[in-house]
Figure 1 (cartoon, rainbow, N blue to C red):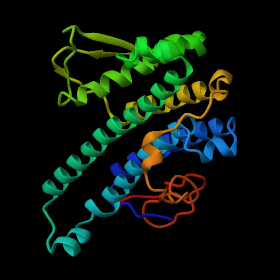
Figure 2 (cartoon, one colour; figure 1 turned 90 degrees about the horizontal axis):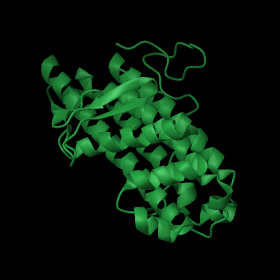
Figure 3 (cartoon, rainbow, N blue to C red; figure 1 turned 180 degrees about the vertical axis):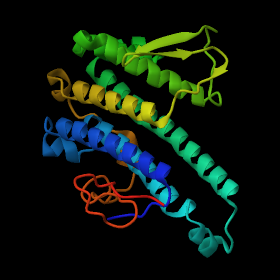
Figure 4 (tube, helix red, strand yellow; figure 1 turned 90 degrees about the vertical axis):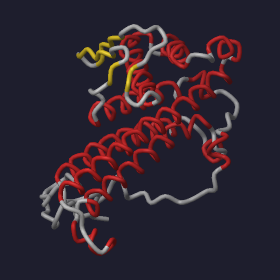
Length: 275
């Protein structure tokens, strides 16, 4: 399936999303190798953990396809609404829709990850979970110390920066910690400063998708630990309640997305020019 993009920024964002999606798909495939077909078919939280993140990224990718193919196309506005807004209004609509999509990415990804991690620790060690359940950070720290001690600093930074960015969403983008203190996180050779009662303005798409890719790797490492794979069935209550629906497999792979005509430009499925 190929798409024509009318905006270069939407194309660039779609490329970033597709790259993150491929990374999560690879981590998810690695996890599935450790579980039986029976476990995978039983809607187990260990095997659905990353599939939920895949679904979130798919939704965001569809959103950018909508932006690039429709919202930035004056002819689409005329066909759909009878008239096209001026360029400034179209730009504003695109900006609002893209920002809404970013907020959804942060919220839905964190919720998917948090629910799975909590279910796993609760089944692995009920006493530890009871002690740590109030603070998701401590749950992640515990798993990092148990299974990734040599990379503790990196995965703790991933946990912290993702958690704090997510918390700012609840405060309209403002970092408002209970302690009232600034927080600085060293992540991937850079310091990210969360200043109390100030807007967090560094959480762009590239950073968010890198954090998601790193957290996906963290989940993959946890879910493939022998002590985890040997646990009895862990039901994922959210997925088990959803009606089973088939999702096309070609959105994040294969021919992918292109801008404009098919230029035959090699391996990049998102290659081509935008107008």
